[in-house]
Structures are given as C-alpha cells and as structure tokens.
Length: 207
Image (tube, rainbow, N blue to C red; front, side, top):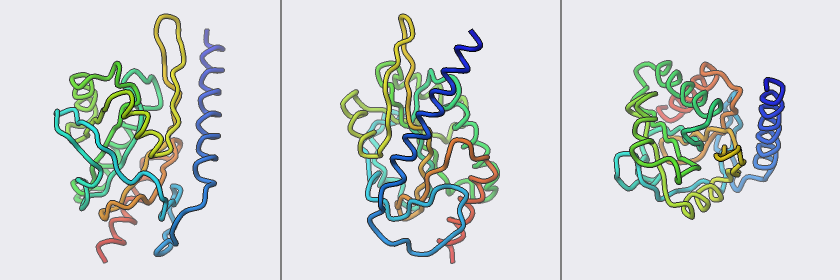
C-alpha cells in the first residue's frame, strides 16, 4: 500500500512539473517593466488569467477585478485533496503572517476544481479552517472548465474505487495591486521565499 501511495505521489509530481514546463515556456505578451530577483517564476506581461466570474463561499458574486488595490494569491484545488491543497493553503497563511503590517494588503483566493462536491457550505468551512480572510470561489462545472482554461490550469478526474481524486496544476498565482499577473509560485517554495517575493512587489509599488 505504501509503495502504491509513493508511486501515485511521484506520478502527480511529474505531472505537475510537466504542466508547469508547458505553461511557462510560452512567450509573454509584453515587456517586463523592471527587473526584480524573485524566487518564484516571473510571468509579468502574461496574456492569460485576466479575470473570472465566480461565486464566493459567502454567496456573493466576484470577479478578479474587484480585488484591484490588493495583492492577490490565487490557487486552484479542491477540498478533498490530501496533500497539495492543504499544504498550499497552510503556506498562504504563513505568508500572510510573515508580511506583518502588510498582511491586510494581501487577499488569498481558492478556486475549486471540484464544484460537484465543493458546495458553498463546504467551501466556507474549508476556508475557516485556515483563515477566515481567505475566500473560496466556485462555479458550475462548465464555468470551472472555462476558468481553468483561461488561467492555463490543467485538471482531470482520476477514478478511485467508488470515488475520485483530481490531478491538477499545483501553482499559486500572484497579482499585484494593479490587478496584473506577476508571479507563479512553485509548490516546493517555502513560505519565507514566497513572503520575500510579496514584500518585493509591495515595496516596488509603494515607491
């Protein structure tokens, strides 16, 4: 059983890395305004991930443009994820804490890739388990397919007996306060590295 679990974890890691390679080898549409030494992948000028129209776990309608003026961490996943998603959300909490006085400048968004199971009440409970300031977002199955495509996120159901899991791209997008997509944080990056990137972005826009 342990060997099977290790093989499955290796398969998902390989899949995530191949997906990342495919996404971030693509050319960007605009020149980068200035150079900052980031720990994450600098995707300033990317021509995707511009907006979404989804429902929050509070029942309100949201678009990405509504968060203009804040720095945004955006992650795709699902509640029944056993490792990648809770790790990413725990890291997001640590990032907020490490930002100190700037923590309120950061909004964390979690978009479910499993709207069939991740209902509004379940998303609300899931977000509260990490930070009540986190916002869970969901749409219909078709909306989920469309938003994943718009943000270049791969996902697929994987049968598991009478249930299923989800393979998906394991990255966190970072938007600056001007609503511009700036970074892709890799899953293996530490909270300290990610917080350093956020501090650099915040400082660059406060000059």
